[in-house]
Amino acid sequence: MLAFELQNFVVENTIDIENNLSMLEGIQYLVVIVDANDEVVSSQAFSSNEKVFSIDCTNFTVGMHQVKILTQGAKPVIIPVLKGGATPTIENIVSTADEDED
Image (cartoon, rainbow, N blue to C red; front, side, top):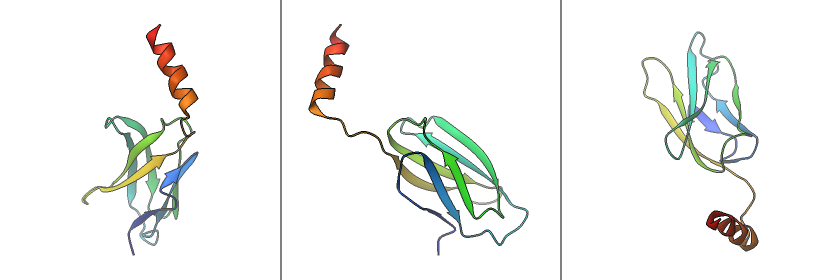
């Protein structure tokens, strides 16, 4: 059993992280989300007795992110996650390219 597991690898609105160590008490976790450019997009503290850590990701950009779970005296746990979104169509790509030329 892993200490932490994502309930879904591809997310839209919320990242839910299952805490399989919720029986431990008195431990604080810092969950940091970074985007593909390694810029922090979210940082939130959680208590070890919480069974699920939920993080709102509605304002994240579409693409790969890393969930970093940090606690004092332990190696960070890093979990990749994909923020989903609308699939680009050829019409959207062409219209965006036209706007860039202006």
